[in-house]
Amino acid sequence: MEQKIGFIGAGNMAEAIIGAVVQAGLVAPEAIFASDVRSERLDELKRAYGISISRDNAAVFTTSDILFLSIKPQQMTEVLTDVTADPAFAVPRRKLVISIAAGIKIEKIESVLYPPLVPEDRLNLPIIRVMPNTPALIRRAMSGMSPNRHATAEDLETARHILSAMGKVIEFPESDLDAVTALSGSGPAYVFFLAEAMIAAGLRMGLSPSDARTLAITTVEGAAALMSRGDDTPEALRARVTSPGGTTEAAIGHMTVHRVRDHLVDAILAAADRSRALSD
Image (cartoon, rainbow, N blue to C red; front, side, top):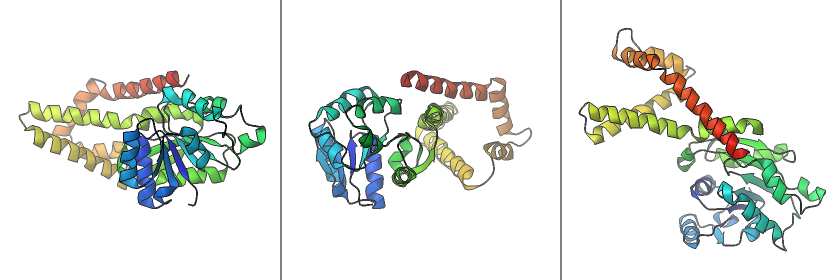
């Protein structure tokens, strides 16, 4: 890639993408530009990855061919308004905008970026909304992406190329992103919650904290690897472990009686409801 990649906002997810881009060699580090209100954070990223840094969001917008909006959702309108108010704001060439701000709809971004532009320039400013998750920090992300009407197949391939450097990516209609947020965006927390419970049970059974942690985390890692490497469904894998009259059946039976699966499904649906509320 010969394009310049910019980041407005330099938080953990921005760093995950920067690290993946640099590690994969997609662009030279000096072709990556990041802005943030925190000078010390920008200095950290420059030292770690050799990227270019700035306190000027509008300058990063102007310089970039591909621009990531990685700011907090509540800051989106203010930051974009400041960018469009800059005298240099223009779209003289095609520029791809990728937003990773949770809960911010594409139409919200359009409502700030598009009004100052003539119709032809709006066509040259496609927007793709992305919902990644925290395993991006170790290049194991699951990302869902949704394009607006101006995004071409080439724009989608560009976004996919970058996002694939930090994990897997699937394209969805934007109406599905609340479900994506609930399932994979918040999903790592559900796994951590399960691991917490496993560790707590180990402690109650007299294991040391260190041993309980190792047992739980290694078991979760191994189970995830089994699910990802074959064609067997989670249900089939669970059945294979659950011998009649055995210890696993005792645990699964207890969870079934207490409707643990149903409660987990309801919890994920509650996350989707919350995502919709935040988007509105």
